[in-house]
Figure 1 (cartoon, helix red, strand yellow):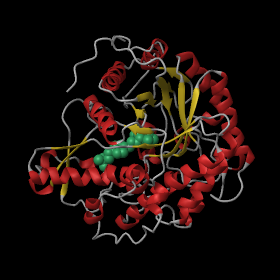
Figure 2 (cartoon, rainbow, N blue to C red):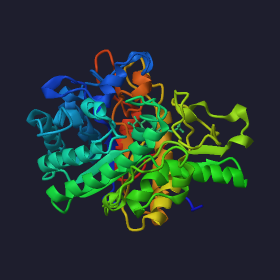
Figure 3 (tube, rainbow, N blue to C red):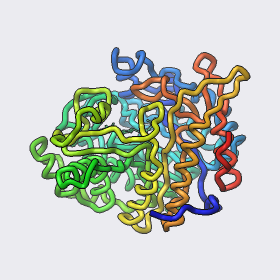
Figure 4 (cartoon, rainbow, N blue to C red):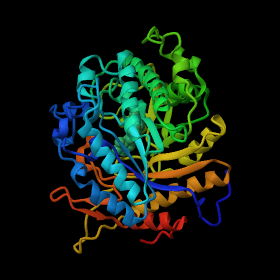
Length: 475
Ligand code: GBH
């Protein structure tokens, strides 16, 4: 363990950002040629999201983006990570781009640049055009080629003014929550399909990276954002350590292996061999996936605690190891048990553990030496409510941010090259299967009026952004 850093100041060029994603904030789902994505279909299917909530209106960012950018500027943010709705740009997932769809993002980018805020584009944050799902979705190889084509179109349109690009957000969720446990769109529960999906997401990342580079200025940066799990075991028992390694392969190695090293972990191929023969892995795929990257994005919320299933104490077993589903998102890991981690929790039930973020950053500092790192998501849901005077006080979120930003600062002191931090999320929004019940925003959204009110955490974070140092904890 490292010593605490005495003065909590950050490098001058450190980016202080916030993150969002298209389906979670935009609304306007039928405007300007946009067609349904798998999340439109899923959220409109009874029983799939809390209270049947959908992103139809979300927080109406599509119409309010100017106000939202002004708010970011007023707070003092220096970067903004958002995603592009694929079916706004290519309604069928194929063919030429729809100009009106691209125009929205061009206006948003220009508004950000005019306010001195650096845009970071995520090309894919889980909202596959429904037509591509109808043709087989991510388990189908062709989807990777469709993604590369889409990446090229967006790169051509915005590569002159956006420097930071992220191909995929958390492909683990797309593959294993979308096709394995089925708690995310498209809601399929087929372990073999989830492993094929993971491979085709890897391929999409590789082909998409090459496509972006072929149309963009060389100065632009291409990265990927992974929800790299911090896997801990309940004991040092060999059986528990083996369980930990298995989950590490299924959470991390399945993407990092091909993307950063050009191979799948042998142990992953073995553990999943009863489920798939991996015949979908073709000659040349690993070379296509293993593209040099300019940066790596890490999304971190909470660590994962596991043991061998045989040694599990049922009372500590974590129900949400499988999310909201009876089907596991961990193919080939029926011999692993998931446990509740101790300590304070957020409204999601996720334990608060900033040391996990330090550990994660140091791991990739070792495993991907020389690769600049960004924390592309970190944040917490709390049950925020306005006071009678209309203000929203969220000291718990300030404490969460303080703890995790201190962990980032400690990692920098320990030699990690962390270039920026993106708080999840800029504002309250559609939290996927949980609907609007979980508030991750630094900015409060009144869902009756869609009025935005910065919470005290937004002011606190803005002060950090302006001064490059963490303000004291008091609210
Ligand atoms: C991110 O997902 C998303 O990128 C973002 O859109 C979302 O709003 C935000 O976080 C908040 O949820 O051990 O099976 O329970 C994070 C999703 C949550 C996925 C924790 C892995 C643990 C898997 N991650 N989850 S399990």
